[in-house]
Length: 130
Ligand code: THU
Figure 1 (cartoon, rainbow, N blue to C red):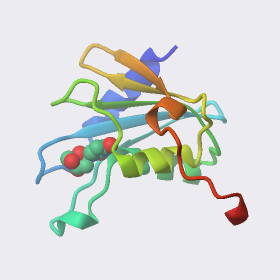
Figure 2 (figure 1 turned 180 degrees about the horizontal axis):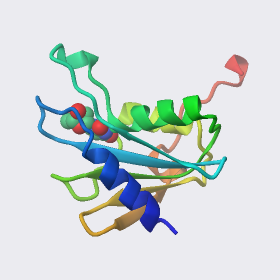
Figure 3 (figure 1 turned 90 degrees about the vertical axis):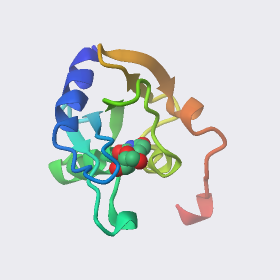
């Protein structure tokens, strides 16, 4: 069931620190340990120092002991189907598989499901780096 992930992402969005863009974003990960980890975007007066909701959630997952993203939801109150930015796609891919589903939400729930492969096709791979 993805509705619990939607609700977790929506709840996380309330913690956004987005005084500059005024564009709160929430993210929720169901990890391989069965737990849900959440995040919001955290901006900074020095604009490039802010970061997105997705890496906040990834950081919480890693520090909570989760190792892999089983599925993930993203929501923005000002934009239905808010899609992870390019940098976030690469960050998500680090802990996901090609088939991992990413849910884009509107105010009612999950509105679109994409696989990681659809979200980040022809992604960077370098066996030599491990
Ligand atoms: N943002 C996210 O949190 N995730 C994304 O994937 C896209 C953008 C945030 C960054 C910034 O705080 C605000 O949305 C406007 O770009």
